[in-house]
Length: 189
Figure 1 (cartoon, rainbow, N blue to C red):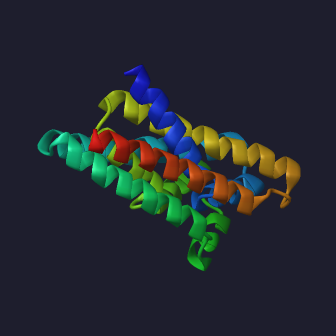
Figure 2 (figure 1 turned 30 degrees about the vertical axis):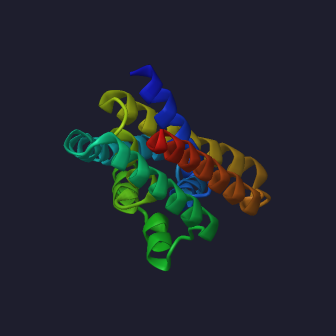
């Protein structure tokens, strides 16, 4: 369980860096208190990643290991390229983030839940769950994403817009490419 936790934590933490949900987290944190924002992010992330792990567990049990490793490696290459392309908030997402809601936790959780469906962190969690322990993958991916979002809130509030976004994107993409290379080597051995 612990190896799945730490692997998922690291992969999802890195995947979340520079992601559009970090921009949403920062946008919400500039408008609302940080704690309700983090609670909403945590709830949405836990639900989305639970579904991701369930899907990955079903796929992992149904498919042989070598093809899964090849598909996972290709997926990580795609995630790396996706990261280099970058994410931006659409006008609709910015409007949802700016709206005043009766419950900040519900508003943040709802927006994050919808934003994470089909996102690279969800797909990475599915991929990891095909190969790793399900509980460890779920906990690690959830904690990794929440900590990455909390980190951007703290740093973003402290530094404003001086974050080197391009450097972060390149570093994250390189990490995905390294994971892809390791999976290709494992599939070929």
